[in-house]
Image (cartoon, rainbow, N blue to C red):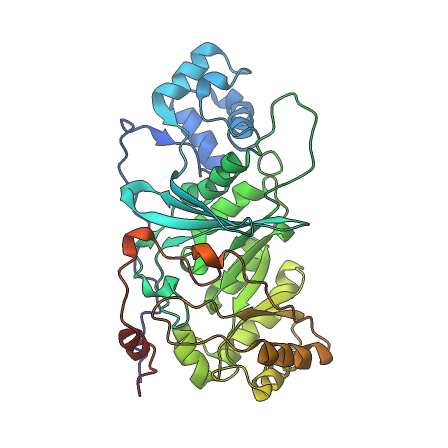
Length: 396
């Protein structure tokens, strides 16, 4: 029987017309693309590599948006750039700050669509949760974001632009000539916002390559974690072409339960997914794979589930840690959060088996910025609880 859930990618990233007179946005271009763009407007090929490096540093190291500020370029060349190009990032529509310091941004992208971005400050790091799509095609039944239909992929510019927007808000761009400051308010990126990153692979890859470039934002690949629901064919490509850390939205230990919670399991089941994960650390020389596991009362939180989870990981010899996520409830949600005692008992079984089992502290819940709660403000119309349960296969 063919799965009926919308689990395959069905939209392309369509170049959008802007109101800037047809000028090309330099944000989101790879180094090679930037070089070609500069040559196309008259930059001599012999100078192209140097000019690419200079413009790149102004945009990504110093956060400059005005060509006139690029003082190591001749005035005539700055005028040439301004005639043909712009440096644009998503526009901040609203900014909410939680009691715990978490910041949630609603940003508008080309076409008037909106996505949400979350910054989570901690003692030893500052993590930005980045979106890769407007909406999501995966319809995971416990996820508020998944109740918003997929509109389109984000471009590389719109993905890396979220990082640049957050650095603007944190006032973290260094000043040219100032002493180097190694303190990073935005030190980590997690691709865990709206959308399935591996259904927008090329744009995610290009954006992360820009973020990792040592002459710009300069984030180590070990500071970037990509979270996927299990797009098995793209997992090996992630190791080879991005090389970041990997997190998997696992959430269930049997195919019957995972089919309901994470419908993509109907395409690539638990056994196929575990096989791809077992190969990942060897391909990328990465650290442990993070298994994300949302704790749902009476659904996936039994002692038997904990033991099955351990068995899955051990049988495939996967270097792993298990991130237990208390379910973040939202209006109309068809599930309830497991009790604290049940979560602790589950975590203890995993810990006793030799695996790290941190219980994620819920952040930003008061501003609907917690894991699984992101949803564009333009799509706030609530479905009824009965409607959501029926779509999740829970109405029987």
